[in-house]
Image (cartoon, rainbow, N blue to C red; front, side, top):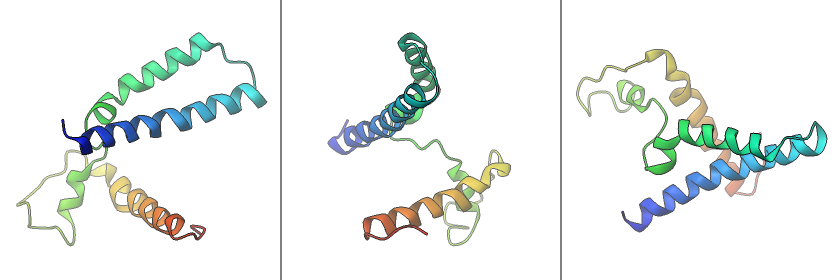
Length: 111
C-alpha cells in the first residue's frame, strides 16, 4: 500500500469514528445512558457493514451512474448502472457536499 492509500484509509476511519463518537457523547449526555458494551457492538456492526469503504480506497457510492450522463457519456463505453434508482446520491447529494466543502474551505457558510 502506498502512503496516499494509507492516508485515505486513516481519514475514512476518522470520518467514521469522530462523528459516531460525538453522536454517542450527545446521546449519553442529553438522552439516556448507553452501556459501553452496546456502543461497542453498534460500532463493530457498523464497521463490518462499511468495511469495504473503511479498509480500501473504494467508494461506497453508485458511481457507475456518473459515466452514463454528461460530460462522461461515451468515455468509458456503454455503461449500464447496476441500480439506476440510486442516482440521487451521485447526481444530487455528492455535488452539494462538494459545494459545501468548497464554501467551508473558503471561509464562508455553505448556505
